[in-house]
Image (cartoon, rainbow, N blue to C red; front, side, top):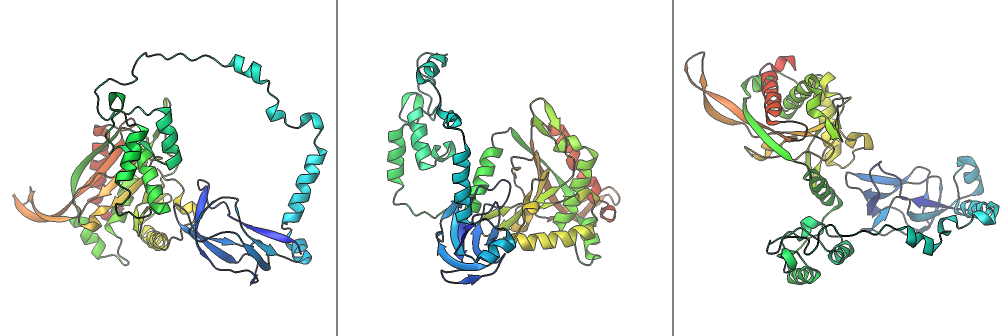
Length: 411
């Protein structure tokens, strides 16, 4: 009978691989077309792999806990000729025949063109690169030097290590550089320490933060009174969370000054074409940032419903590709953990992130009654790419957000 593969599908434009969490089929089992048969975990969500057509499971080549690249065959189905004709699905046999036919049709003189290089002439054409600096590449005696030798780089690549991973190692090489021997001693030293496996989600967060930190980031904050927001919230049904009030004010402020959310490409600042803003959602092993679209045009009521659905799917790891497609900024409410201050880090593709700290009751001077009155205040914090936004611009942005929050009925 013809056989049809079950492939690891393309689960998102930026996703190259996924880890098998659960296999729901076994050899000999009959499956329907478009049936979810394998559950996989990507850096952003948990998704299902489905069958292309109806058939009987012939073989399962994937293993739970293993990670496979997009396009990898995970299993095989035996199908009928009628099913192949009905669905138009390509079988392994027809794919093999097609490759044979294409190879036979290729002219002999065109074969192996990629390797038709005269080695001697190729070597002669290579430019000779002379070192621009003689002697040590780093000043002698400087501890923790950042230079990494080719040998060290090769060993790090073998182990899958980044520069940040070896920052704890004191180098004994020239200029304080970390040598391969230093690395091996350090790895032996921590071999017996307790450890845990980093999940794909944790690794994705680590990679994003590492890339974000290549830019000059700065943080400013200001207190904002929340009493009017809290009064307005009590009158709503359903009640919007404080995050949504801040999210809405943030979107309006950015729409009035789009350059604040622009990103620098060469000598150009590219402005956003839509005010799509992500919201950081804490999950078991990290943080996901689903994105709400066109926040500047949505009402608080619309945001409340969209946000509730989005957070529910985020915590169940059921976000779609469009849910996590890049926004222009992020809002994170770390005040839910009782934190009164923080320095959030924007995603690599974003210039800004706005943080909301916990509200605190405190006495605040009132010019109206000329006395201290009790008020609820919270810090709003913005971290920004200092190449695009200056401290003054970030301060004005926070001032505008504060102003908007004092008229919550207009949000």
